[in-house]
Amino acid sequence: MLRVVVMVSGGGTNLQAIIDAVDNGKITNTEIVGVISNNAGAYALERAAKHNIPALCISPKKYENRDAFNDALLEETKKFKPDLIVLAGFLVAIPPKMVQEYPEKIINIHPSLIPSFCGKGFYGLKVHEGALARGVKVTGATVHFVDEGTDTGRIILQKPVMIDKDDTPEILQKRVMEQAEWIILPEAINMIANNKL
Ligand code: GRF
Image 1 (spheres, rainbow, N blue to C red):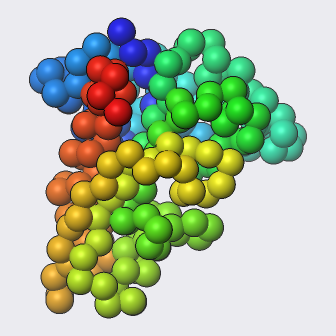
Image 2 (image 1 turned 90 degrees about the horizontal axis):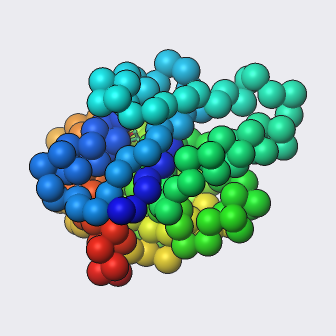
């Protein structure tokens, strides 16, 4: 049984897609053992609570410096004894010592077709603003392993999404989530849980 910890910062729609996929059998051999957020107000924490998944907030504001926060994040994560850590809209940079502790055991969902519109400064709506500003006709989402860079780890899955001429960043974000993120993130977890990578 793959023990999965999901890290979140916001609405938690990707977390919900994972929860639903475990419930409906699209993900097998998997247990979501914990949810960790850096944001006490993240609705994702409500989603975890509704599903009786242990959830906690580790807020950088509560620590005197980034190193202390990084140490706490790693220590609390280790308590769950995860086989896989899933970054689902998690907006905190994973500290190198955590990547070293979990080599090829941390995955991330990014809302573009990496290597486009990724790296420093490309998160949330900014990704879709970049795609619209460049005028690309196709975007999508990527699931990749997390290494010590930003969105630079080995790519696991990608799914394309067409851009419409009247798209706003918000409309595009929703389409990429619905047609790509919420599909390939559960699929990637299921592949890892069943040694299908
Ligand atoms: C969204 O911008 C999504 O594209 C990205 O993280 C943000 C929040 O997603 N992956 P979620 O609703 O918290 O899963």
